[in-house]
Amino acid sequence: MNEAVGSLTIVVGKAVMIILGLAMFLAVVRLLRGPNLPDRVVALDLISILAIGIIGAYTILANEPVYLDAAIIVALLSFLATVGFAHFLEIMTFRKRAKHD
Amino acid sequence: MTEVLVAIFLVIGALFMLLGAVGVARMPDLFTRMQATSKASTLGIAAILGAVALHFGDSLAVTSRAFAVIAFVFLTTPVATQMIARAAHFINVPLWNTKINELAGQYDPVTHELHSFKPPTPTEATPTNMASVREEK
Image (cartoon, rainbow over all chains, first blue to last red; front, side):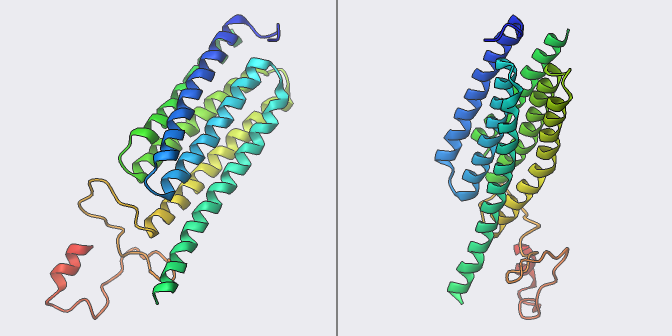
């Protein structure tokens, strides 16, 4: 690692990586188990937010501000994906109703 | 001094994110899960990116980028959560331990418009079945 980062930051950064990995594991459990589609969409949203957190922690750990651009992209994409899924779910109810009528 | 502050912010953010993930894994139904994840993880993001902004405090470009991500997440998470909750209500996701669902029947089934109070239509509001209509609501 870079010398400009203090030893406290390295220890805490690694601990934060482990905590966020555990959180990611719990979110993946919900993604696989989720009884229906909205549950999975919520889990996916949480996973992308956790990815932003991991990128932020890694930015500090590696002392490289360039990685922050990846966090911006992930934030934009996760919002688009969530809104798209929600719109798809709502459109699906219209289709189901049209099939019934 | 800055290093200690960065460490504190990082740990706070990571713990809040872990809290949100535990809520997603343990909560009993979709809507409670959603309120656990959206608020806790948003605060976690704010703390972690605040730590990034502190760590690169001498460079304005990095700090402003970190605050841009924070502002973006704060603006978009409520919108996304509201849209998922609305869609889930339309596809009848089961509610946990709910006695009275005051939202049931308030959305127009065809146009998906929300009414603050939708009076029962004349066919279902005959005096004989009024009680059952009120019970459904």
